[in-house]
Amino acid sequence: MLNVWAGSQTPIVANFNPFMPNALLHATQGPILEPLFYFNKVADAAPTPLLGESFEWNEDGTSMTIKVREGVKWNDGEPFTAKDVAFTYNYEIAKPSYLETAEATDDTTVTLTFNTPSFTNEDGLLQMLIVPEHIWKDVPDAAVATNENPVGTGPYTVESVSDAAYVLVANPNYWQEGKPAVKKVRYLALNSNQTSSDLLTTGQLDWAGMFSPDPSKVTGGGTLAMINTPVDPTVLYTCSNAELGCEGPQTDVAVRQAINLAIDRTTLNEKAWAGQAKTISPTYALLGRDDKWIAPGMEKESPQTADAAAAGAILEAAGYAKGSDGIYAKGGQKVELTLSSVDGWTDYNDAAKLISEQAAAAGIKITPMQVTWDEFAEGRSAGTYQLIMGGLIGTATADPYSLYRDWLTTEATTPVGTAIASGDWNFSRYSNPDVDAAVLAASGTLDEDAKKAAYTVVQENILRDMPYIPIVVNATQTFMNTKDYTGWPTEDNMYAFPPSWASVGAGIVLADLKPAN
Picture 1 (cartoon, rainbow, N blue to C red):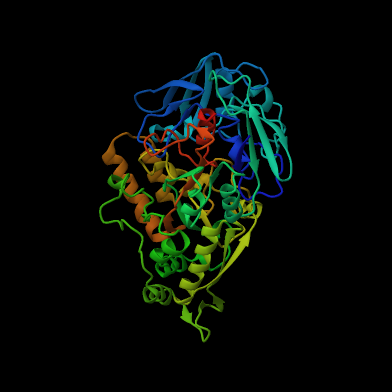
Picture 2 (picture 1 turned 30 degrees about the vertical axis):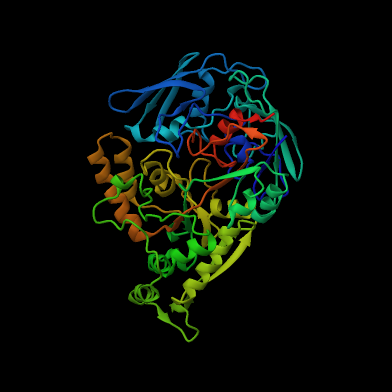
């Protein structure tokens, strides 16, 4: 029995719906349901074929032909075919806005037709989790179905679910012969990083993606190894758009700009992340990997030290005045905000407290508050928050395009009070027609100069508007039991992004693991 941290979800509720953001996604995305291909964000390599074998674009990027794998079965014994792929792409809740049609021309071929050239959407398209038509065609409302007995093609199926844990067992119909060798996986719901660390050091947990300020204490016994793979931006989500229903001082761009200047990122990295995070770019290009996409004249790195005077100057230029209590106000409204972080995420909780202290020096009152995972997920999806300490999903390829598309475009958001659809991530409710047009232009070309011109427009706007306030590229620590299990990703063979929560990658890692004895 491989024991894995399931995250701060207590009590656990049986929900394996890939279209719901608060489902048990650690198991759903990869271990149970698979995509056609896997794009490894920590390796500069071609995508790994899974349910797909090959794909080919037409000349202008308006059509893609995909060959799918033969001989695959769903875990209920039904055959997997190209019809399941076409069904998934056409399924209303999952269908991308730029997709015109998906057609299975035979049992192993799918043709996708787009309403605009879509080269740059490649990774998003091919990593979509494929669901079985014979199950989901009869689901009355895919947005709320809990899918308690999920049917997938992945290496595992669900055996049981309790308030405290859920157990997966090896899929006897799995298409990769001889895999998985680990026959049972138990996901434990734990309430904090510290609890997870304690269970790791006492041999009760084998795999966890979490933060420890002193990882040597966790790995010192010789059973565990740790890898740090910083690729995902940590930011302050801001519900930024008053026109879509956001409420609070953070809807004023001047307040967001001031908070950005009030943050001492060097101190945050040292105290909240023990120096293991990396410097972030406000363009969200990953420094060192994506430098060529940073437009000339753009600020390459976010400020590493606080400048309270500059933050105050921005607020004063926007009509704010500091009151007798030291807090800026305008029109009788003080710059007072709440900053949510998930209870038990100690690095984020510590960072939120430090940001509160740093903002106070600039005349901004930020009150940190810890919430449950469900409160966090529901709040950001519905837009019922002011600031959230959270993360963006780093791009799977050396190109910031998918982050721009998923987190910043109008089509990826909804008005406050309406849940954002699965696969969309624009929780800031940001809507800017210039950004939308630039992202659309970038999607339709393979010409680097044309993409750079489009990214210049995106970066000019987001550096000014700050819908997400960049903090660091998060330290992503993965702890693995290398004494009792072999086959983990290593520095020399990073065949998959290693955290236990990694979408799709977790399924690839589990399929490759073997008991050491």
